[in-house]
Amino acid sequence: MGPARRGASSLLSPEGFFLGKMGFREAVAAGDVALSQVREELEAQLSRFQELLGGNPTHVDGHQHVHVLPGVCQVFAEALQAHGVRFTRLPLERGIGSCTWLEAPARAFACAVAHDARAAAGPFSRRGLSPFP
Image 1 (cartoon, one colour):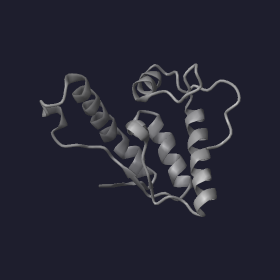
Image 2 (tube, one colour):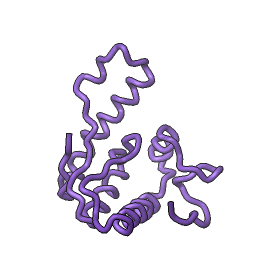
Image 3 (spheres, one colour):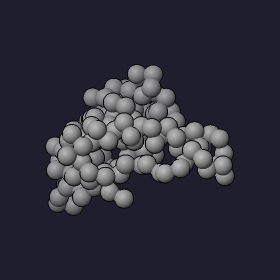
């Protein structure tokens, strides 16, 4: 864990914790997330990984699929390309929308993730990122 951030961040709740999956998705959709801060956080995590393990990761994905969100996916792809990372997860689950055993909110979330993942495929590909299973 690195040093605490000084000052306000669009990535954090008022209590100082990272926004949860729905809070982050909503903040991105509302334009309340500064993509420069997303890039800064990605750089910090990738640099820390390199510092601790002596090299870059072979693949990276985002917690709760935030790496495929509009805007975030471009920043994510740029940061990974800069660090020589060539693989990421593209969360596309066939038939997820017809899974009646999923409650409606979970199914809606899964469908939104799949939609965002399809849209992120282009930015990922343009930055040399390939999906891994």
